[in-house]
Length: 573
Image 1: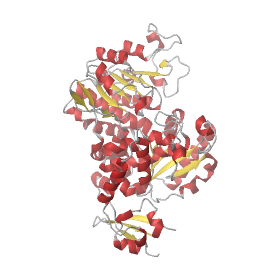
Image 2 (image 1 turned 60 degrees about the vertical axis):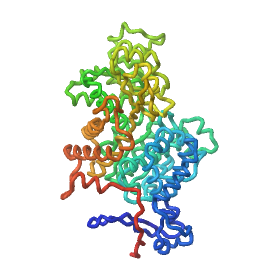
Image 3 (image 1 turned 90 degrees about the horizontal axis):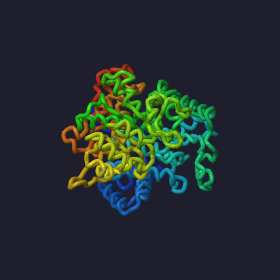
Image 4 (image 1 turned 30 degrees about the vertical axis):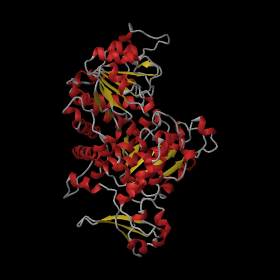
C-alpha cells in the first residue's frame, strides 16, 4: 500500500516527506505533487524524470503562471472552478496562490461564490474530495473512514447540506462547504491540510430540482426523518470516536432543526463546534463590542433587534446574552435586551409555532397589546423598530432589502450611531447594502456585513466595510484547540475568542475605520485568538500543557506553510 508521512526533526526544525509513491501516481496525488518544481534528484529517484518538462521551477514561478491563468476568467464561478481544479492537482501551489491573493480570492473560494459551486456540483463534477457517507451505508462508517487518504487527522468538517448559505437544501453539492471551510483553516490559521478531512453525510435531499435532475450524484431519496436520521448521526459519532478519539469536529450547514440538537447531544462526547451557530455569533459579538467602544455606547444598555430567528439569529442572541451576563447583568436584565423577529413576526410567548431554541427570547404577549398588528396578527419588523427604538439591528433573514429606507431612517432618528449588521449571505440576500445604510443614516451607522462588499464612497469619503466573516474566528479557535489538545470547547473559550477579536478592531483608534480586521491580517488574528483560546482551555481544565512546552510553542508547531518539502523514499520495513 502506497503511503506518505510528513516528518519534522525537532532538533533541526527541518521537515521532509517520506513516501512510497512513485511515477504517475506521485504526480496525480495533490498532497504530494510539485509539478515542475520536483528537483532533478527527486525526478530520478521517484521515476518521473521523463514525465515532466526539463526545466525545474520554483513555487513562486509556478504561482505567477497560475495567477495569470486565474486572471483570464471573468465569471466568479469559473474562477472557483479553476481554483478547485488547482486544489485537486497541486495542493501546495493552490494554497500559495490563494494566500498571496487572500482578499481577492477568498470570496471566490468561500463565501459567497461557493454557494454557486454547491448548486452546480453535480453538473460541474470533476473529481471527488473527502469522504461521502450515504444513509444506505450507515452501518459501514468505520470501514469508510479507513478509506481516507490522510492517516493522522486532527480536524473534521462535516455537513449534511440541509441549510447551506441561505440557499437551503443542496444535497450532495454540500461537500463543497467542508472542502472550502478546511481550506480556510489552512489559509487563515496555517493548519496542515494533510491532517484534516471533509465529510459529507448524505441523508437524502428534499430539493425537488435535485431529485428530478438525471445528473444528480447524491442518494436520490427524500431526507430521512428524525428517528432514522438520529440513528445515522449516532453511528457517525460512534465511528468517529472509535477512529479519532481526540478529533476536533466542526459541524457545518446542518438544517434548522438538527444543527443545535446535534451539537447539544454530542458536544461532551467530542470536542465540537458549529460554525453557523457559534462562529457567526462570535464574530458578530466581536463586531458589536467593537462598535460599542467606537461609538462610546454602553454594552449594558443595548436594545437589540434580530431579524431572522433561525440557527444563526438565535446563536447570535445566545452569545450576546452570555456576553451580557459576563458584563454583570442578571438573566432577566439580559433577556430584556432582545427582540427577535421571524417569519411569523415578533416572537411572543403565546405562539404555538415557537421552536425550543426560540422560546427563551419570546417576549411576553401582554407587553405588546397596544402595538400595531397586521391582519394575520403579526407584529412586523417595522413596528418593532418603531416601538423598541433599537441601538442595534442584525439581519439573518436572507430577505434582500428587508432593511428598507424607512427602517434605516427610523434607526438613525432614534440613535446617533446605530449599529446595523445585514449578515445574510450570499451578497444578493443581504438585508441592505452598505451604500443604502450610509445614505439613509446620514453616514452615521456602524456597519458590518455577512458578505464582502466593495468600498463605499459617501460625501467625499471612502468607507471600508467590515465583514463579519467567520474566517476571522473559527480558524483561530481550531488552531488553539488542536495545539493544546483540548477535549471540549467551552463557552469561556469562545468568549475569550470574542474579546480577543474585538480588541483587534481598527475602529478602536479611529471610529471611521472598519469594526473588524481585514482578511489580509487573518494569520496574525488567528494566532492571537488561538493563544487566547488555548489559555482559557487550560484554565477551564479541558487541556493540559505538555511538560516543557509553552502555548506559543505548541501553536507554532502546528503552523503549516505552503512550501515544497524535500522528498525521500520510504525504506522497506
